[in-house]
Length: 125
Image (cartoon, rainbow, N blue to C red):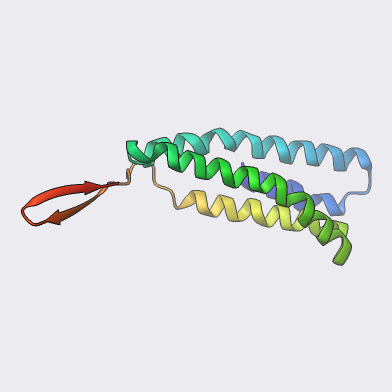
């Protein structure tokens, strides 16, 4: 779905009608939204139980930072490059996100590290 999101945003600068642009923005955002629920499922699947809250919070923080940074970055791109650059960068971020998701292996749960202390065995999250 992230590939389709990227494709939609790459096509926007090449459209000549407002209706086509609006349709592509809506479709791109809809495709992106379908993946958002998967992130939390993957976090729960691959994280040690003691760290699920921390990892979920970190993911939510990144998502919220994106909503703060995106308007500033978009304005800067439009001012110094072009309005089309906004959509190319968005497509690049979607493709980068897709590549990151390809490396996650939910079947391999992250294990807590075991550290030997003397004769006792302690587990650190």
